[in-house]
Image 1 (cartoon, rainbow, N blue to C red):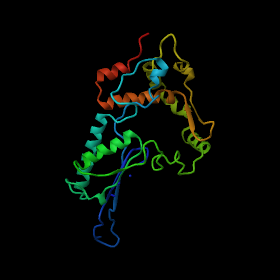
Image 2: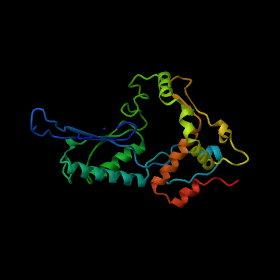
Image 3: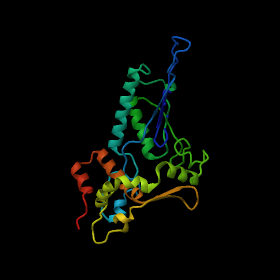
Image 4: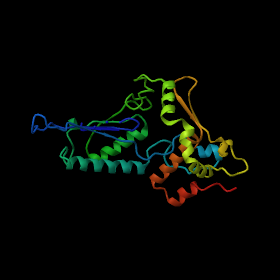
Length: 260
């Protein structure tokens, strides 16, 4: 999200922009605050479709969520409202806005990405930032690729997958170099993923803990394989369950290795 004070965002979700009237400069060369841009990510969401590799790898059931996949949860909305309230207080303390009441519409600009979770997060942020006020939240139609948040997918910028893969390889040494210092953590997570049974998939064997980053057949995307790709989605889902405030006894149960 983008807030502009006038406020802005990318892989995030919405933007609030607040235009600030220019104050008289104390001297010709003095610095003057003209605009504040705040970037936000969406609030706590439910797992994305296909994100929980635990289901596919181990056949271990994952707890259900009350909301559909990839949507903002009520707890996530509550967190966004608290963030909005905090930012309003912070900006008021800095003398940029009044501490209460409805801001002048010309001071604020919110812009959200097009997913439900990002639009809903922006709405919750506004509710906390300016309770009871009518503030429009801008966004493109749901499902459309917004070039602000997805410049590559929207074709808003030149991008070469082959060059990107080569650049990442030079900068990181490749997936195997990233994996090597974390084999102990991968071993622990492999148990969470269900490894240790008599029907383990190949990836449970440490000799298969190798990854690759290549260009997709259509030359438009990058393709990541290996332990990072296999475990990251489930790890994110566990993190979201924890951030959602699900009982720890449940989170621990979900991450407990499967009985042999």
